[in-house]
Amino acid sequence: MLSGITLGQYVPGRSFIHRLDPRTKILACAMLILAVLVCNRPAGYAILTLGTLLALGGAGTSPRLVMSVLRPFWIILTLTLVLQLFFTPGLALFALGPLHVTREGLVLGGQILWRLTLLIIFSSLLTLTTSPLMLTAALESLLKPLKRLGVPAFDLAMMMTIALRFIPTLLQEAQQIIKAQQSRGAVFSRGGLTRRVRGLVPLLVPLFAGAFRRAEELATAMEIRCYRVGANRTRMHQLRYSRRDYIVLVGAGAVLAATFALRWWG
Image (tube, one colour):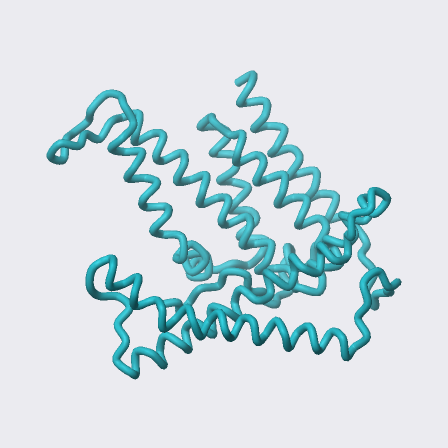
C-alpha cells in the first residue's frame, strides 16, 4: 500500500547535484518553483521541461525513482486533470454522457497537471540529494540574517529538518502496521467509502501513538546531549560556494527571468 514511496528520503550519491552546496539547491529550487507558478506560455513550459531533464540527469535519478516520487500524488494529479477536462467551459470535443470534454479544459488540465508534476519533482530532488544534516545547516545559514529581527533561525531550521526526516520513518512504520493488521484480518482497500474510512482507525491509532513515542524519545535524547536553545555551535564542514554553485544559480535565475519575460512580454 505504501511500499516504494520515497517522499522525504535522502539517497546518497556523488552526482553533480549531490556535490552542490545545499544553499544553492534550496535557492535554485525556490527560483524554479516560482518559475513554474508564473509560467503560462508553451515556450516557458519547454524551458522548464529542459531544466527538469537537466536536473534529473545531474542528480543521476533513474526513471523508476521519479515514478516512485510521483506515485503518492497520482490521485491528486488524476483528479485535477479530470475536473479541468469536464468542468472548463469551451468548445466541446466529445461527450461522455451528460459530461463534455472541452478543448480549453484539455489545454488547462494539461498545463496544471504538468505544473504540479514539476513542483513535485523539484521539491523531491532537494530532499533526495541533500542529507538532513546539510539541509539544517543550509536553512540556518539562509535564515541567519533574520536573527536581527528576533527570528530563531536555528530552531526553525531544526524543526523543518526533523519534520522532513521523519516522513520516511512514519511511512515505513505505517507499512509495518498495515501488514500486521492485515495478518489479523483487517481490510483497507475494499468496500465503500465509509467502510474504508473506518478501516483506517486500526492504522491511525498506533501510528499516532508511535509518532508521539518517537517525539518523546527524540526530546529525551536531545536533553541528554545537552541541547540548549540559542547555544553557539560550530560545524565540522563549513559551507562554501564553488564555481558549479554559481553556474547553477545563474542558470536557475535565467530560467526564472525567461518565464517572467514570456508571461508579460511574450
